Length: 92
Image (cartoon, rainbow, N blue to C red; front, side, top):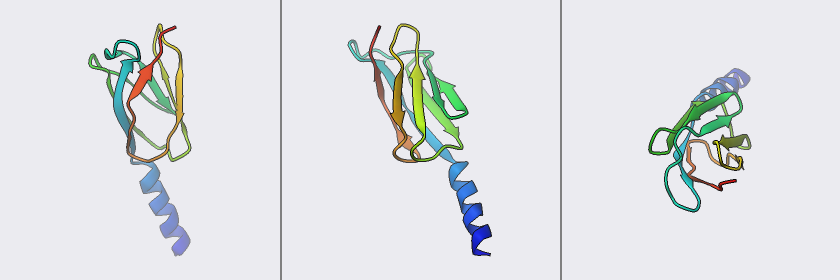
């Protein structure tokens, strides 16, 4: 019974993870629209104001990757579930 409960809790926790924030240009501070954010199989993109939100089945230790035309790829390890991560991209 304890095993079933633990698996159930794990499914709930991993299915409800959210990472959100704003992606900006490091030099100018302006938002980066249409940047692609990927965490495992879950992904999203920024809106016109650089805001993004990715919800999915990811956990602490998974890698987040941000890619936008004209910028270097940004990677980071997820440290907290339901984390706010603001990113500054460096232009190429």
